[in-house]
Image (tube, rainbow, N blue to C red; front, top):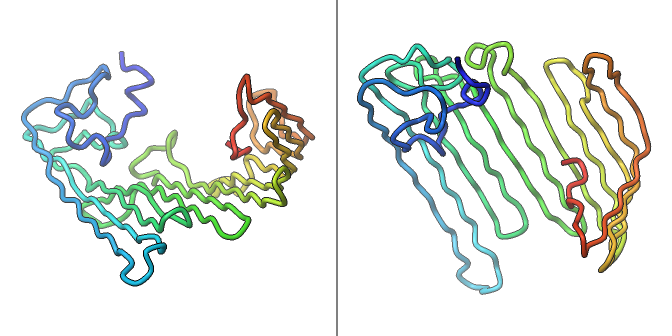
Amino acid sequence: MISKVALGFEMDATSLFRPVGAAGMDLWEPGSRISLGVRAGIDVLPTSDSTTLPLRANVFLGRRIRTDDASAFSRASNLDIKESDWVGDFELRHGDYGSLSGRLRIDPETGKLVHTEAIARLKLWRTETSLRYHEFDSSTAGASRANKELQGSVILTLNKNFKLFGALYRDFNTDTNLRSAYGLIYGDDCTDFRIFYEEIGTRNRFIEPSQSIRFQIAFRTLGELSDAPFD
């Protein structure tokens, strides 16, 4: 019997060089295998102004080649065929001002991106913006894991204690907002208080989509609410 954890596994750039791709799962990769990959990076350092922050970029691309097929694994796992899909990751960062990072999976036969995840963050003036795009193609993921979605949040600092925020979680496959929230944050040395309007667009058996006004409060000596209220 295959566990649910094993069904959700996918070999990507983080697990490519593990001796066993699905270590800790209930399946074993047969045959011999070799993992190949290359990582390149560059730092652009300031030459005139020492206070200027550096620009850093790096990218990785690799794949696994094995002697035997492993039909016990699903196509989504990237462990099922002798020559795996290409996997990679990338990051572009400019100090604390902004960054763009993500991971990719490419079909070697067609050159098509079958799994994409990209995260962008920008800190400018009094605003902090973050976006996450995720797409897993149905031809590889299967019907149960295929998705195409966008998550985003914006925080505007008004003064030392008050902030405004907005957040959105959009599912492009169903063309619906799974969740959205907009509200006010108050924080000091002792307390974190939030009031916001929230819409939930998902359905779960007898639970229908809903709209509500929510209150959250946390005492910093006991715990702390996330600075990304949508998470």
